[in-house]
Amino acid sequence: MGKLYVVPTPVGNLEDMTLRAIRILKEADLILAEDTRTSGVLLKHYEIKNAMQSHHKFNEHQTVESIVGRIKAGETVALISDAGTPGISDPGFLIVRECVKNGIEVQCLPGATAFVPALVSSGLPDERFCFEGFLPQKKGRMTRLNALKDEARTMIFYESPYRLLKTLTQFAEIFGAERPVSVCREISKIHEESVRGTLQEVIAHFTETEPRGEIVIIVGGKEN
Image (cartoon, rainbow, N blue to C red):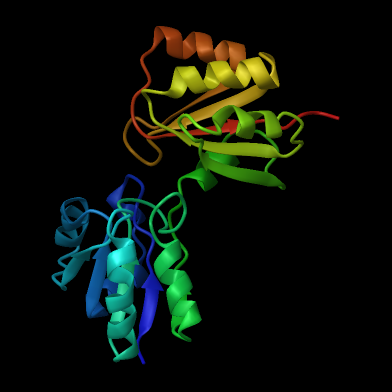
């Protein structure tokens, strides 16, 4: 029987790829990629020429059975996403679950995940935290936020630059305008930036300065 490797890829700087990740991708019989065009740039950079197949949230239910069959037949499969660790706000959970159900060994390599550097560099308490990822865009959004109103742990959210101000404004309404926040964008890239302050202060900053790039929001928990 083969094996499934879950392989983190850089969230920005290509130098964040680990030596082990490069070796596993070169040795794999098949690489499952969220977007083959995006991953193709990374693989070309490291001269990885293995077979690649598209595996994303729109087709994973249709392809998971055949992939599990290939691994059971002895193939080694590596799963990557566009950036970061597969399964963390990216496709990955479904194929991992099916492999576990079928007694297939699953190994997840340590590597890049956007929220870790954002949390550690925020200056907010990081010994206990809750990861919320992307909030629902419509249905259930306010219910989720209201459920977090009294959360004492530091909270982590992913957001697009186009919805950042709306999200920060909702946070201010529910958590209070004085709640501390750190907005980290473009992690590990040339224009990496962390904007820290109260929600009111950070909203004012991004009202004047248009937000760009991938964004991680770190919100301080409610103080008892």
